[in-house]
Length: 345
Image 1: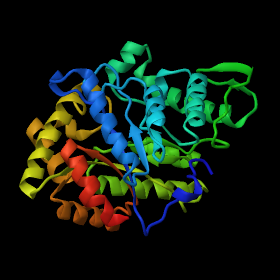
Image 2 (image 1 turned 30 degrees about the vertical axis):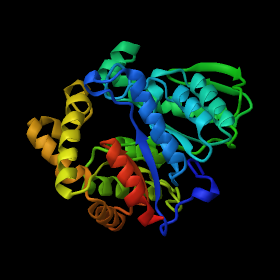
Image 3 (image 1 turned 120 degrees about the vertical axis):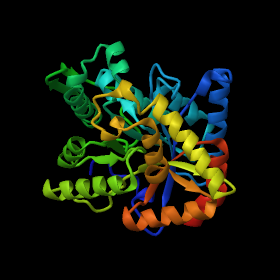
């Protein structure tokens, strides 16, 4: 089944799985950029020894929100310094690359990491990136979808012939093939109803984004699972990694302030007007209202005990079984790893 996980990591509702959505943020350029990478990689070292399933590397361009323009190159560096951690892309921005190049690079990473790749693919949304790379924003959806199909077929077939709307080639042998056969586990980022419906029709697994409210995420999951059934695909044993912003502190009040500061940074540098075109009605709200929305409905925040309670609640209301944590601070990451995650393992 497309997107199936290795046997040891199939969905098991008795034990939650945890990953980290790793950004390489450079707020205010306050430290040298190499320090940003050093700090992030030190956290990844901790993840490798702490029972995390996967580090999910976020690709962004032309923004200090996350200075990681190549998740495949970063993934290779991570592979060389870890032994247990799976290496996920969240996501490869497939609209910006030739799909045969993606197939080659991800397969190479899978081999050199010993078969530890989780491939996540997404369309992208920042119009600055589309303009700079010369990709028409309006055609990005069909381009992305065709790219995903080409990559998967290039891995499965000895030689691929393809004549589509954007790519044409005959009898191309893509080498190497991935270590994990026939493909690495893969997911597509799906946030909008149209993207969720398409993924369900194809039978693809999905990654859920960190910016929807908890009720919105529950509805997206319901829509996706129903779409699978409607299209004749099984919804059993699906692994649906769901990203959530996290703030953990000694007290609830301290954590709320971290959440508020993080929400302000996120709105100012990421979920802002430069990405207009992604149909999110909250962008029409005043900034303060948007911050309140994040703090009250999006971010999981509080003392360790309160965060555990919130995650337990999401297991009931959202059927959450794989949480990709996106901590707002290093201290939040440490507290989450030390005080929260062991409760679920």
